[in-house]
Structure formats: structure tokens, C-alpha cells
Image (cartoon, rainbow, N blue to C red; front, side, top):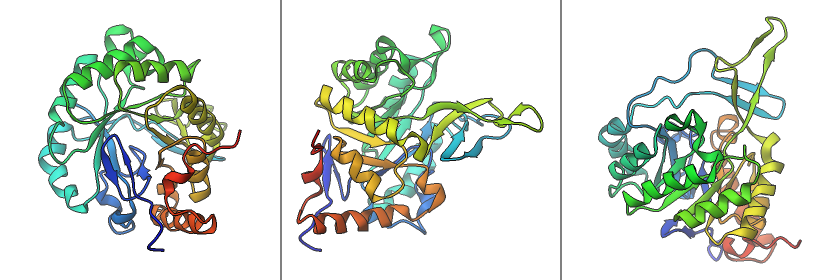
Length: 304
């Protein structure tokens, strides 16, 4: 299949394939080194990183649902300094672009994190705006266009790296948020983040998760994610990374037909640790069956 290419590029980041990992589902990448061929991975998006180390939420953090899973990890991570000093030097050997997902309690923290991560071995930063805005009464940055825009602007002022904004689906109008992100200077849009959900133990009458609510991911959210990617593609010119319930190559192809330039695999990594290899191989087979030579030929080609 030497005449078939899965290579692509997003905001100047050259990738061997359009297959990325969704933050929080792939650790820092090294945890999957025994399973995944990094030559088939477009980019590794590492778990959410904060200014200071975080121990995460107490109690049960993950529970399975009929068509996916709920999680409330609470951004457990060693902090940005430990990432830069200890982790980044180890994972750069995989010859795969590293994108760092960052979370802050204030607009200023996002800028500080972006500045600290403006280093050679980091390809881009992805802004997780589903975090509470401490200065604004705890409302998440990503559900209100003005606060989200300030986060983007703060990051852009402090880095020369591409800035990816990860949109929350827990909003009234995803298109309005995407347009605001484009206007604020974002380089790439990734969507969707998890939907808010919960589970209850009928025997104890208590919430299953220690945090009561958590983020829903997996096949259950795919139709919502696919619809949002399609809507956003009609409204903005920025590159789009589509995610939400991608379990196989067919799912990935749907997202790309809807307008995603690349896709991110999340929950599937827990189910089948080497799933990225299979998606890569099956994408090649699909292009061959369709007499196509480049994965870019299917992007945005939905016949609606």
C-alpha cells in the first residue's frame, strides 16, 4: 500500500496519520508503548496538566455505562514542572508530536502554562476549558464565549505554539462557541469534550462516582459529537479534531466525512490498548477499496 498516504498536517504539525489520542485516555504515551506503533500515531495528546501537582478526586473515579463510561478523575497529574523535567525527556524518543492538554483555575494560569510549555519538544497546547473559573463564581470557562475567548487570548500571547481549543458540548450553541474561538485566535478546534452525566447505586442509594457527576464518553456520545463536528465545519475555517466514541476506523471515517481533519481516540484505548494500530490499518484498506490515495480526500465530503 505504498501509494496510499495517511499523512496529514494540522496548524503546521506534521503527522504520520490523522489518528490522535484524546487527553486523559493515553496517559503520557509511554504507558502504551508496548501496544501502539507510534509510527501510526499522528500525535499523542497527554493527560491534563496543571501548574501545581494534583491528587485528583476522592472515591470512585471511573464507572462503566451501557455504552461507554463515566469519569471524574479530577485532573490528577504531577504538575507542569515535573512534566517538563521528568516526563517530556522520556517521551520525546517516540518520534511522535506531543501535544499538552492544560487546565487552569484562572485566565492567567492558562497563559503561564502556555509560556512554560513553549519548548522545542512540545508541538502544541490544547486548552481544556471545562474547568471552573474561580474568579467568576465557579462557572466553567468553556460554557461562556467571553471567558473562553480570554483563555485563548492569554495562551496565544504566551506561546508560539499552535493553540488548540477543546470545546465543551455542555453548551446551548456549539457553533457560537466555535465562532468565538476562531475570532479569539485559536489555531485548531477539538470537539467534543465529555458530556456531563451520573450513575446511581440502587442498593446503597448513593452516587457511584465519588464526585457525584462525571464526564460521559464512549459510543453513547458519538451521534452528538458527530453532529457537532458537522455543524462547526459549516461555520469556521479552522482545522478540526473530531472525537467522541471513536471505536474503530468506520467511526473515524464518519468524523472525517463530517469535516474533521483529524480524529482523537479516547475510551477505545481502555477497551483495546492497541486499537490505534487497527484503525490505521483499516483506514489504509478503506482508501484502497475506494481507489483513493490520500486520507485528505475524504475530509468534509459528506453528501448532505
